[in-house]
Length: 510
Image 1 (spheres, rainbow, N blue to C red):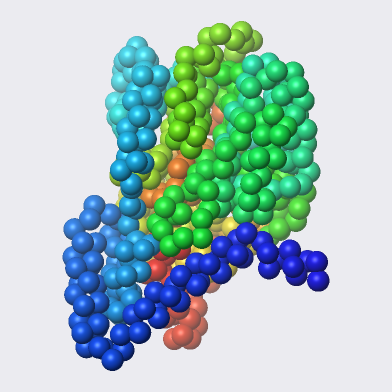
Image 2 (image 1 turned 45 degrees about the vertical axis):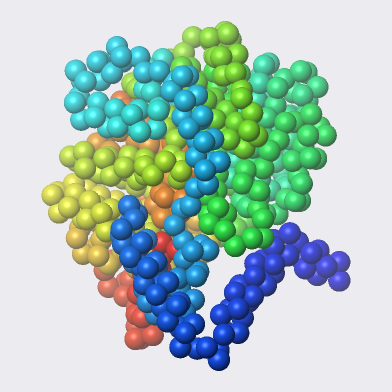
């Protein structure tokens, strides 16, 4: 009974019930005018037609437009209303003002060293244009004096994270999409408490919807320990598109000289202490040196956005800290992506890498939900003789989403793209490797939510020693992955064909 009561009173269940009540109210409001059916139908029809015109003329992804237009035309009475409640990416004037302030802060604190840009331009104009795009559209400079270490599994990342957290003397900034009580989080929390006692400035941002299993006011519990905490975009049981915009980033910054990012959240499945979906394969990267400043500013910008504070970033400059001699190589460019600026930086980084490939493109992604442009880019690369390989999970975490992923296999395989499934379990890593020269490790999934709705981040690497480690890990993962053949992905029965087709059309809304 206690478990049942706990489940029924969980904030997500209660919130879902409140949203359901609101939906029922909207439906009843429309059906209440049944005696004026023709009038109500005409008004809703005109509304839906107007909404469709609005969608067509928006600067949105075509797949996202189609995913909304079809249900609106099929159900004109409710379709237009539902789009007004859930569709688009509405930004309040208050949020726009906050974003402008953040952009000003980013521009003020992240300046590109032009000498580095000149070096890259002389070395490769293609590399320069890719990195210049990121700098201009994400305010993310390129750095040289940075050591990078790649972690091929969550356990390695976790061990290094604990070690570096214990060294903190000035501040610890952490920002994660998922935090779940268990071995991983408790061991990190214990260190954070100790560091607070030592006078270290500890701050923590967690996505409130991603951390659905935490208590509603968990940040207050952290505050009691002296950890300055804030939930991002606090979940409210209200019909609004604002709930779509989640903080999917995973960032740790220690004293301005050490930073972590990648796909790994703070929950036991990420270090295989809690078996879920077989073996959990993920990855991450540690930075030491100049490039950590971008992760620091990235964190502080979200902190300011969430808290409404006017933080002085200068006092967190890494130059105030002494750091050991670093073994550095190549160029490092941490970058962020925001759903509030109408610039799909994460997707464009991937597209640019695909278009610049001459020999190979190796990709790992937990979800493969692509728009037409991405399908064409991968297909053209494969048809041009580039070795394009994609590893997806063998055991999915979401069966419906995995069904959509499989819906893209046929066209890609037919065009020469090689698809593999990680047979040992679930692969959560988000990695691109191109021609031994480029790689990116980060949080950006190949799905619509990551590419268009979430706050994301990643690190672009150019000619760093760590690229060899990323490629080696990929090749080892291929050895324990199953290559999917065209006929193996075919489904039988008209119903299954229709179901997969419908899921593919509606994929942008998932």
